[in-house]
Image 1 (cartoon, rainbow, N blue to C red):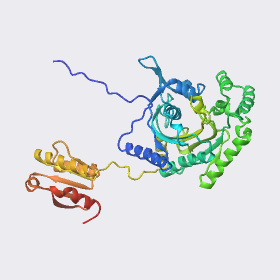
Image 2 (tube, rainbow, N blue to C red):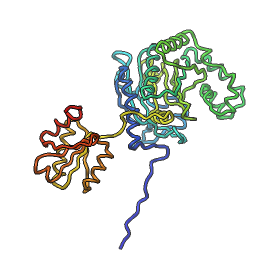
Image 3 (cartoon, one colour):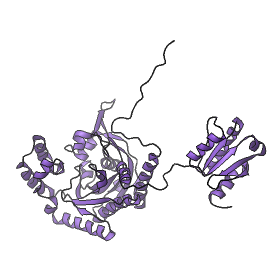
Image 4 (spheres, rainbow, N blue to C red):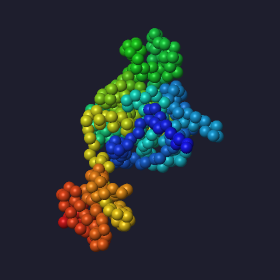
Amino acid sequence: MSKKKQFQALSAPKGVPDYFPPQSAAFYKVRQTMVEQAHLSGFQHIELPIFEDTALFARGVGESTDVVSKEMYTFADRGDRSVTLRPEGTAGVMRSVIEHNLDRGQLPVKLNYFGPFFRYERPQAGRYRQLQQVGVEAIGVDDPALDAEVIALADRSFRALGLSGFRLELTSLGDRNCRPAYREKLQKFLFKLDLDEETRHRAEINPLRVLDDKRPEVQEQLADAPLMLDHLNDECREHFETVTGMLDDMGVAYEINPRMVRGLDYYTKTCFEFVHDGLGAQSGIGGGGRYDGLMAQLGGQDLSGIGYGLGVDRALLALEAEGITLDGVESRVDVFGVALGAAAKRTMTTLINDLRKAGISADMSFGDRGLKGAMKGADRAGARFALVLGEQELENGTVALKDLAAHEQHDVKVSDLVSVLAREMNGEA
């Protein structure tokens, strides 16, 4: 007699988290809260493909960035086209805006999105190869008031979750007019330092990226590095001062961080990051900034934009660090049906379906468990009411309605069940 083949159990790929009950309910709540805050500010949802032409990210994000040079999931499809799983959201939104002429109407175009993004990084706490984000983009207007609105929206999104142990860091990265002179000055400074060959090469291609080097031996040498904030032209300085003034007016607390460097090359002028010290090394929970030349770089009009990406995974970790349990995230049903016997189960299936059609959340016991075992299922489901249907109830055309909180029970005609439950759930006699 042949042995039955044993299959080895499979695991998720390294660095890719699963969210399952009960944590998945908290995940959904965090994401929905962030999306709802965006909708309150007039942003509309846009759904984008998970993979794009590789050239979009090479041109938009910047070939010298770690994201493009080291972290992208890139492969050739069956048509030998190079495609990449999206590492961030802004470039894809811009591509869609240009392709579908969304920028030809009323400006700014205000869009929000959510979903998974992919980066091949070394997995650790809070750093995943599939990361979940909620983002917004406001495109078409160079107005510091729009910068302030977007930053305040991000701040409000975290506070709507109950988070408070984070701080907002803010800076300006200048624009195409004042940044070249600063870039040249920074390069001259960097070339005098004792840097390894790879870092010197980075200084030649993108010297601002060196400022983001976390190694202590590099940071020590950068103590006297020139700062972009000290080299802003009048327009950029006025823009930044207007943004900070508006944040002051709205009561949004912030810290100026003149050494901030974002990991994407398209940022100009206002740049910001939200940091939560309770998360250790991976302390960033969201960030963004203005990107005034990106649309033209991708073949569209020369319009400005500003946006952000907020980390859903990181927000969950921040909630855990602060000991916050979100309200209303339990996956519960209002009613749980218990059918005793095959005929009762057939009727109960119809009753449960009728309740759902009436907007009442309901589930039922499956399998051949007895009354005691089935009622345990009602407890696990967190149901407020249980319906018990046996032979006697079938004969009478009734169902036993149990109020599990009040420990009360009475019979209800099957034809009246939906209306009776609706009244009792609303607290009506």
